Image 1 (cartoon, rainbow, N blue to C red):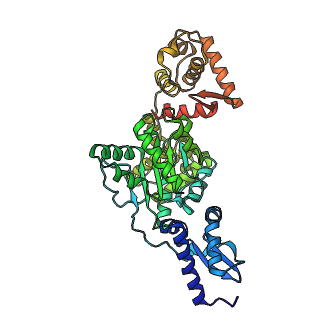
Image 2: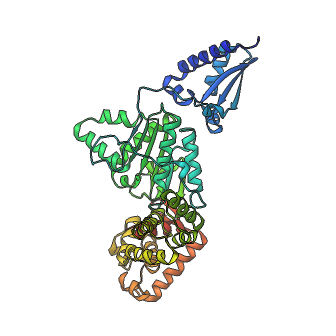
Amino acid sequence: MPPVTDVDRAGLAQEARRILIEALEERRYLHWFEGKTRFHADGDELIVNVANPYLLNWIQKQFREALGEAALQLLGKGARLRFEVDATIAADGARPAKSPTQTSVYRKTSRPGGTSKAAARQYADLRSFVAGRCNELAHLAAIQVAEAPGARYTPLYLYGGVGNGKTHLLEGIYRRIRKDYPALQVLLLTGENFGNYFSQALSERTLPSFRQKFRNVDVLLLDDADFLDGKRAFQEEFLNTIKKLEREDRQIVVTADRHPRLLTRSSDELVSRLLSGLVCRIEAPDSDTRLTIVRQQAAAMKLDVDDAVLKFVADRFVNNVRELEGALNCLQTLHVMTGKRISVASARRILSGLERDCLRIVRIADVEAAVCKLFRVSSDELKSACRTRTVTQPRMLAMYLARRLTQSAYSEIGEYFGGRNHATVMSAERKISRLVEEGECVRVASESWPMHDLVASLEQQILAG
């Protein structure tokens, strides 16, 4: 084959584009190839350059046959394919052409039933997310999804306690995809928003329009999926939505406070769909991560404090990132009021009041309510003489948590749960502790669940109130 000139290269790329659009349809081509790939020939090889390794793996897996056919049409019999990663594709600013559809985003503060799009706002950036042992898998998965939406990990399910970065990662994914893939239609909203829009569509008899909007997006980002738990109509609509998106290789990212298996009032099919991609837990930040966070936040706030003060804050507020931010806001206010540099002594004085005011008092009844909800047993059953496993395990767990989270004595806990003596509570505490330490599992509905994860999830729910 004679050398390929620049003119020939341009013609080959255009012809490859035409052949692939004909084979795949324009929407799929724009989604996976436009602005993310380059084509050129070397002898009898059609070389496909791809922006990153994740997208390359996906294109090889999904479109090898179509690309092979394009190579035959372009280069004749004996044509071969070669795939290569070319990071300059992204660096050169190659972008897909604008599609007729526009990116949509819905704020968490949208009024119930409203359909207004979000006002301009600054969304969180993946680059500002502080990664540590507590969240590194979730952070890495978010980056990979943002770099190649739909190529892997769909659905991506991020879960953990409040204030630890789930929404930050979701907004970061949204922001990165909008920047790198402006032709893609991206939808960011909460579970409550989804329910409100669905209810409005039902009442106004506009379900076809609703489904057109939600089932034809390229990327669906749903925050606070716990809202759908127990709401059958909302769940069914969401399930049908993600089934269609999955069939068309679209990206889905979901966040929630609980693992999918703990969405005990959701259908088995929805839970299995949420489990089918990648599930990542985001834990409360460890000490090193907390210190990095407060240093970063203090720098952003231009807060003039010693590192000893920041270490004091990181050591004292351990539950979530929002607590750390709230503590720094208090210190900044004190600095503005006094005009003085914050010392460890003054930080200790002002923040001790914040700790005292924010302390949540957990009652035995709070523990009982959380356990009953999860295991679908009644308060009367927990307090009864019933000795079936479906009741005794939740009862022991409730006693164990009551001992950990309340100030109640063994005798008080035993009395609350059906007039049992202190020895019964002590026995329950030992049994659950052993199950936690040994990684044993317990049945919740139809699923088997590690006891240590179950305890952690229940504690988060109870302490969050």
